[in-house]
Image 1: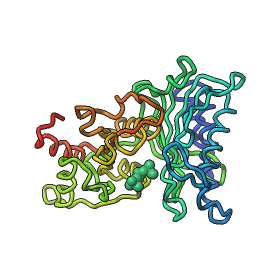
Image 2: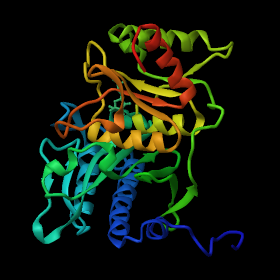
Image 3: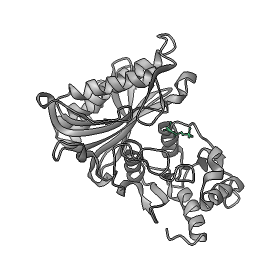
Image 4: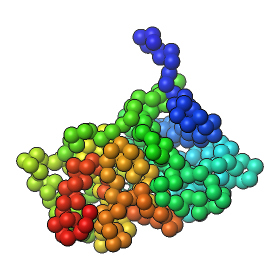
Length: 337
Ligand code: P6P
């Protein structure tokens, strides 16, 4: 390698081909990467191009759509439809699934939140895209209403000080790719990402404005975080953008929670394109992705089977040390963990 240039750049395409030998997966990941580059460009130029503010529409979640929500969504839908390897698409921004025309249809079904955290976009806080990929069974939306066990690829792209793509093939390792804007390629920069072996930084990440709605074990756990464990104090960090909060949790340690509560009995975050993909990333990096007490038990987010494309799920995701604090509070409340 010369001082300035990598003569053997470890690109996204090279990684996918080497690890899957599936050219159609290479095409899929490259199509996703193209949309991430387009979104990164739009997000980065939002101020100059007057892209802040509302688009004047409401999405499937009932959120006011930002101009960038609509643009990011269109960028992903167009890239995936014209990839020639997708048959069904589900987006947070679309009430109904998108069935790809037969002449362009392929073997993958993709669910995505094109610009998660976009309520932060007008003040330049990090945002991201989250996606999950399943293989076609009958080419209907039912192909996406399956648990994480059937998800073949899951990941996110974080648009921040750097543009970083993190994903895993089910059962595989978690890998990170940073966008090199000088060549427009995602370069393999983090290999086999794992939670810090010692648990890392003691960080809890949640919206404490929901405290009064939480179940008592969750309230107790956050109180424990505030008072410290074994004399070690915790730090509170909450971006309000799941991709940023999960990315920090994975790299630094800690726990991110958005639990079911009295206000949101099934949680706030979406199962198919937020919960399940993030759960696969977290678990395959050595963490725990739990629903907390939900549907009569403490379960794994990755085991949930979405009953509708926009259904919600509770989220407790982090390293074993810190999720363990929450489980201890459930045990004290008589809940089996
Ligand atoms: P709250 C953004 O709207 C999002 O879906 C996630 O990215 C984020 O973690 C969460 O909701 C923030 O929700 O209720 O704290 O604003």
